[in-house]
Length: 244
Length: 314
Image: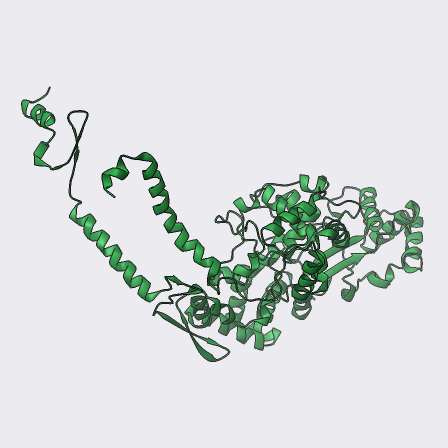
């Protein structure tokens, strides 16, 4: 094919340009899907419970990812501050993942359990009430608004299509029992989503108001589980190197 | 003002004898065919050579379920056993944690402090300097969110660590315990138990314990009998004399230090009494998370030593 043919034919030029540019992306991204070591073999990672899932949706809705990353990189300074570096396995059920690329605020990959529920509630309502030097905006409506979860089943079904093992059938439930254990498998059962969500909110009482289920309940439930699924004391410091 | 020569060049389309591609359109428009500058060309070749060397040294090309690992290696140890891995940032981190100057010296200090007893650490200026420098970092990240940067806390929310008054004990051992296991502070709400008159009376009595004059003597005496009696049972945690009980996190009521209500800022006795009464009616429920899984025992000791020094006391 002569250079002139391509240059004088706009349609062909566009098509070939797209092909050339996509090669760069494809060789970087596609192999990650079939290289065996991409996702580490590790115990404990499970999909979100219905309440955590709604919290995650709110996290996305409020744009938390624009200022907070969820990706601890394997550097000494990050490890000293945030804890063990993030694993690919820890975001295997995230669609989309919340790694982020900008830290205006601190990384949140392991914020779960670091502060009390009560602190999170106060901090989300008015950050400067507890951290005077904070520049984070307040999210007071989270505590005011009732959590809408009438569509929780549909949200889980959508993720199931994307490959998250939420179960609909008896066989899927049985497979989850085998994979995650009975207790977690029940949380992943779409047919029980609503009662599970209500039960977790009642049990956890994340927002300090047991009479209602607010958006704050979901948000704090999500924040408090971030980065807590893997017990790193069970793996020696060389274990995760073997997956790279 | 056009010079004659310039006009000629434009017309010919070949100024300075530069070659064109031969492509002519709209009668006289042509495209130059300049060779690339040498420096650019050689830079380009250099990047090609660089990438070849890079592919050789580092992980590069995906092949089926794996990838070329490169011939550059990183040595590190796992539980004393030497290990070798192809170059990657995780192995690099393990090696840095094991061999870098800063990490090694930090670890040595932490080991010495973990092995020493508390008094030795407090009296050794080198150790203390390390404790205070290292702990400031962890305190800023893990503790300051609630207890504030200087440890002064927030009245009504988070206890002040910068004074010598401690709910759960201010010895280094007690603070270590607090950090490792976390604490659940709880005083039951008395709104179902007391009527307004009783709550007022107990508040008057509690203020009198702290040395606040000006309470109605009848109220104080009624409050005392509720406090010491079965009805209130306050003595069970706060003690007969109001000195508190560290194992329950029950504060001393006699020292006029108030963590949950701003009694000191109140203007009159009536105002102070109202603050105490409301607190008795609504109770207290506070939680400090456990950090035993997040910080190493040596780090917790460093942190406890630092926190102890903020205000001293027991």
